[in-house]
Length: 68
Image (tube, rainbow, N blue to C red; front, side, top):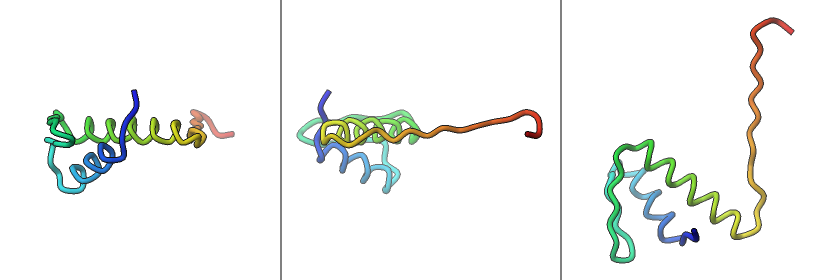
């Protein structure tokens, strides 16, 4: 799915103000929690970066149970 910059900006503004209901382009969406809203923002930003040809950022975490 393709997303627009206005959708990303609406998500960022909602997070900054603490609101769970977003309206853009005549549509309205209500999220259940701030975590769900942040997850939606991450997905939109990832898709926009992919559309612009930017590589996906990966994060690798290493855990150990014993001393190395």
